[in-house]
Image (tube, rainbow, N blue to C red; front, side, top):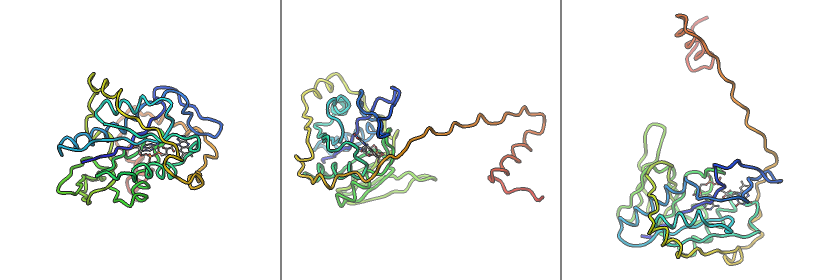
Length: 260
Ligand SMILES: Cc1cc2nc3c(=O)[nH]c(=O)nc-3n(C[C@H](O)[C@H](O)[C@H](O)COP(=O)(O)OP(=O)(O)OC[C@H]3O[C@@H](n4cnc5c(N)ncnc54)[C@H](O)[C@@H]3O)c2cc1C
């Protein structure tokens, strides 16, 4: 089976983030593979290995000056990558990105498209479902396990109380929850092999997309720091600790207040 994984290169989370003049994350420094996407790559590799044929390929949109992050997913075992990089996409919002990725994927629709539930830098959690809609495929989200059985994809979808089992006919789009598998480390052989694997870099024109349909409709108008949390209150238990906890829980309406 053929699986396409959406992978995003993000600014190194270890570096101090900065914003540009349009309040957008400055992406001009070192980019790395979003850790959230390593789970999708691992799930894809396991599915292809279990099926005995086919391959894992990658799609990405973003700056292609440095594709080290993409190469690290190739070193895990993906066979090729397509990156759409174009100055026209500066300021691209999630829907614009979904349109671009859909254009790449629809050139040769795979059996399965995987993405992370949300990225580590933008974390809107919207792109994969937009992608599914644009491709006309079912979207199965928050998967903690993914299996393919007789032409169907079967996922355990994380819920507050456990999981739902959700089944859809292939092809489909599935979002994988972080931490559900242990992503493999790239071996030396994998790292060497990744150097020769194809990273196709495309422009908007290469995809035959109408640039006027890619104008972002989302704008960041201002940004402010999140309020810092108060340090909280500290009591030394003088025998009244339990009563104070109950009073606190009543005050924040976790417990119904006692009759007054
Ligand atoms: C207002 C605005 C301006 C932006 N400007 C730029 C810009 O100038 N340059 C730029 O590079 N980005 C820019 N971005 C970010 C880029 O467009 C995001 O990729 C897109 O908005 C998806 O948002 P997200 O990361 O929150 O997706 P989510 O929905 O949280 O992502 C879920 C998953 O979808 C997949 N995915 C998401 N984005 C990509 C991608 N780009 N390639 C492959 N897979 C992906 C990944 O698997 C990811 O984990 C901008 C975003 C916004 C909202």
